[in-house]
Image (cartoon, rainbow, N blue to C red; front, side, top):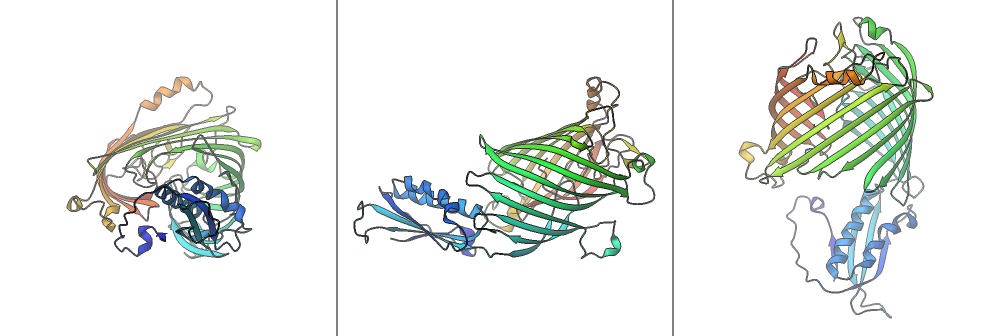
Length: 464
């Protein structure tokens, strides 16, 4: 008997064949893996051990698929085929119910390249040219070189659309216990029209990722040399005073508990993410920065999804000095505080927004399928990526007087709260970003805020 395990997406959208197998006791006597050319066997053998503990055919089949999934997650194989067979033709077999399992792998090329568009919530979309070596020395070592340019970049506009503003080099080494160490070198240029500046960041980062109590932890050291310049000739004086070079050396820690069923537009689950930064390790700006993000998603009646999200943080200098504008928090934008322009709510001078030391944002959403597609939702059509949603967003940003006690100023976070609501259309773009077209109505604004009443388009990954 031979069974081949293939996922439905590998079948060119053909209807999957339903196979009914009667469960029966079995003993897994042999596990083989073929197709390893560059990959060292000790790097993958630990991912196959669990299948040896199977005592029924169905459990062996399910664990084989789990092993296949783990092999694919390593990112070094383009395909993994599972073949199950009896050991009846072997001499000296241990059991008449013996089973052997073969994992036939296909390694990725030594070097691959790709061009793609990448998006994030707080930065401009960019196009990226990336060169990758996914298995450099045979144990999952990965070397990635990226060149990119942000869409709509105003600085360096004469360079041409297809020239590069940014680059990064990343070297990663995974370990058999699931941890990962990475070294990155980068140059990143970002336009900040909300305060008429252009920020160029050069630096390096060493990062270690590991799992503890089923949560993902990241510990990193980051060293950045930053250059802040003018984007136009209207930059306000308080911003101009910070032009020039600065250095930041910091330690970072992030812990993520992600129990959502998908990254973009989850149906169910929750997410808790906390991060801390201690800047001033050895040299440069000195401060403590904290961030927390919470999400909760629940689907009722198999169609309607309710989501709630919250994000907040604070920035505290180690002395009475004012933190750099590039380190401060900013709020506003089509993916977080809808109905406001990107990072254009809060303290400002002459139309340039200065950011703050403390902020909070919250959002409530209700998602439904398209009205004409209600009954067919979940059938596998491309229309499953679309949802209609209604939302309410609220948030506030506070800039402290660093010469006065902070505790007495926190009550201002509940004053002048920005609130907006509306409805629109959301699309899950290639399971990596969400596109939104919303009709927004700001309900509460503060003098100086740059709000956007009416249609607003946004691209990003935020579920708040």
